[in-house]
Length: 462
Image (cartoon, rainbow, N blue to C red; front, side, top):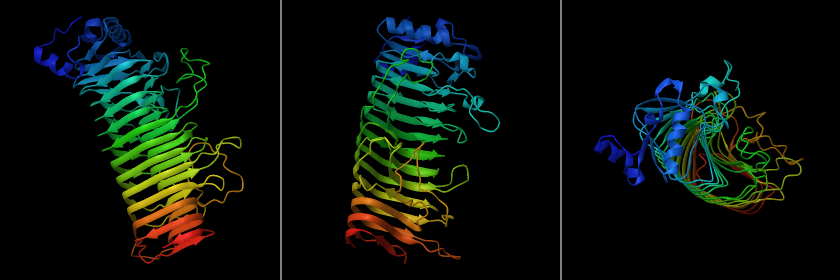
C-alpha cells in the first residue's frame, strides 16, 4: 500500500529510501497503544513490503509493543519522532530471543527520530540477577548493506546490537543508553564482520560499549533459534573497522577487541572518542588464537572509575593468554596509541607471553594524570571472560607502576607525560616498569620524578 500521508511527511520519511513505497504499520493493524501486542501487524507490514520488492515500514507516533520481528532485504524500519518500538516484557513473546532478527539479507536499515525501548529492567530481579531474557536485542547475521542510524535505543536486557558475518555495516548517530547495573548489556558487538563504520554515537552500557569479536558458534544466535540449530559457524576475521566521534560510558570496557578471538582482527582504527567513568577505557584480550594487527587508537580522552564503585580500574589493558590449556596462542603486532589523555587511579597493563611477544607496540603523545593511589597489593592482572591462563606465568597485576609492560618486542614510548598527586603520603610507584622486553626506545618521558624500572630486557634505549 502506497503512502497516503501528507506530501511533506512522505518526503521526510522517504529521504533515505529513494522514495520507495511506505507501509504504515497502523494500516496493518498495529494499535500503537503500548498495551496490545503489535508483533503480527508489524511483521505483516514488513512481509507485504518485501513481497513488493522493498520499501519503508513506517512507525508513526505511538508505542508499538512487540516480540520478535524479522527484518528482510530492501526494507527500512522508519521510526518517526515520537514513535517507540517497545520490547515485550514477556520472554515467551520472543520467537528467537531477539526483538529484531535478520539473516542473509541485503540493503536494510533501522532509522528515524524515534526510539527502541527494550524494557530491560524487567528481566532482572531486585538484586540485579538476570532472568531469562532476549539477547541480543538486534541480531543480524550473514548480511550486507546494513544501516542503523539516528535513533535512540534504551534499556536492552543484554547485548544490544550484534552483527555477525556481515559486510558493509554503518551505525551512525545513535543514542544507546542501557542500565549500568545490567550485566552483559553490551552496546555494539561487531563479530567476524568487515567494512564497518561506527560514528557519532553516545553509548552507555552495563558491559562493553563497542566491542569487536571473532566467535565460533555451534548453534544459532540464541539456543531457541531453530533456523540455525546444530549449525557450526566458524569465526571469520573482523577487519576494516572505523570507530570515531563517540562518547562512551561503560561499567566494563568502553572500547574492546576480544575476548572471543578465534579469528583475526586487522585494519581497525578508533579515533576522536571521549570515554567517561569506565572501569577500562581500552582493552585488547586475545585468548583463542586469532591475530590482532594494524590496530590504531588516536585522539581519545578518558576518565576511569571502578565497576559499580568497587575494585580497581584499568585505563588500557592488552593481554595475550590461553583461554584453556588447548587454546592456540594469539599474536599481536603493529598496535599504536597516539594523543591519549587519561585521568585515572589505575594503571596501564600490557602483557604478552614468552611464546607470543607483542610485536611493534607504540605509545605517543600520552598524558596520564594519576588521580590517587589504589591498594594494589592483592590485585591480579586484568582479564576478560573465563580464562585459565598459561601455567607458571608471572602476575603483573600488583606491580607498583603507572605503565607496566611485559613480553613485548619493539616497544616505543614517545612524549609520555605522567602527572602524580602532589599532596599526602604516596606509596612507592615507578613511572614505567618493564620485564622481558626486547628493543625498547623511550624518548621524551616526563615521569614527574618517578623512576623507570626495566628488568630482564635487551636493547633498551632511553
